[in-house]
Length: 115
Image: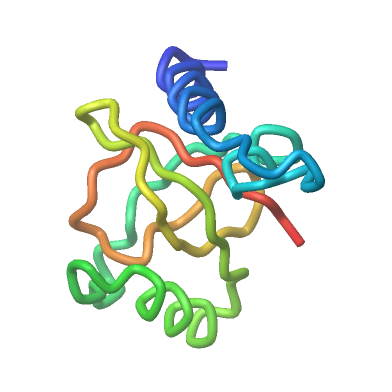
């Protein structure tokens, strides 16, 4: 596990610690679910021959890319270069490298659940 992978896990753990409002729920927030079942993946270089998606539209971009390129649509968390985890969507082939749905986003690590 890389330093970025560890940082992402720590950041998600800190977010999860904030949300424990309902003791009836095993996974009160997606942070908890991803910490238990998530996979850490390595962001791949976005192919220069593919059209980039629109910035700020990762969910729509990833859905479109998955359909066009026969990839798997994935949601999870991405670690920005600043160390901040963000909700994000992308495409993957689980090799464990994954493709971004927009080549302009610089990420250090990704955590996801494969359904």
